[in-house]
Length: 358
Ligand SMILES: Nc1nc2c(ncn2[C@@H]2O[C@H](COP(=O)(O)OP(=O)(O)OP(=O)(O)O)[C@@H](O)[C@H]2O)c(=O)[nH]1
Image: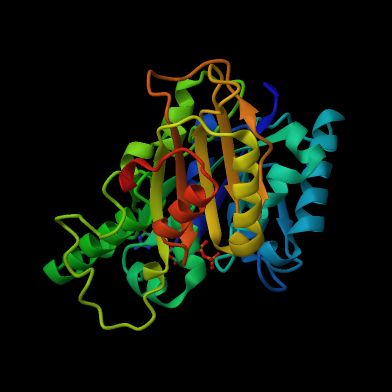
């Protein structure tokens, strides 16, 4: 596991600046050992020509949208890459970046990385980087649920084209976009990049759960405190414009991010049932679930859970609690599943006690 290759998924809507960002990143000396898989939609992949020179390990999947053909293609591509690396036919890359098409739902890619047994033994998900265009970002979020999902599941958000934000009206639009992203995804740091200029350190090693690292990283990964006031209402002083849009297509009204805190230890069987019921009835709307659990019969070893839609990663047990706080904390990023539904289901199954409901 310690030698597994970290994989970053780079996503963002059409034209948001993914390729520009990637080309710049690959010029950094620290990124020299990076392999890149680019998924182009359509017959001719132009991006390939644009970034080719900066990486010898460039692979392109041009057979269609990665999120539609992902199972076979991605598995085969990553498998081939690993075999060639082992045979020393290609340089010994230490990191992999997958750039998705602009329309991709990132979930199937995350599923594949999490569930394919071979991939899971050679690669591990480092994090999701989502690019959002400062100029078109709001309109894109209004009109495309994929863009909302991309932003909601990100570990890092990169706002591009801020150089085009010059007049006061555009600056206000950018503030509104930032506020909206804050509500959609309170835990992901928001970074700005002009023409792809960014330090790789800000995007990689995002601290997604890795059992070989110190447990403190789990807290960084979970960042549950970021969700503290982000539920029920959009309670941010600076989110002007947020409620005034007349659009009927406000996708992010459907998406919520919240953290449920349970004071009492959790019965393992009851929690499995909870996950099963949730996946069975609402699986596709569970954009992301991550948490640290206090399981009743193993109080000294917290369980880490991580799910994307209907796929849950096998539970990982930590050696010790990362801090004095031994309550179970579960972050949910959902579409059309309000916090109250989750709390009702937990209560119905007699699981813990939701702190916020007290
Ligand atoms: N002014 C400005 N233009 C940018 C910036 N970042 C990207 N662009 C331009 O935006 C356009 C789209 O950028 P790409 O990097 O190709 O975007 P992409 O997300 O890879 O696009 P697709 O592969 O089509 O989804 C290009 O013309 C870039 O030059 C920026 O920070 N400022």
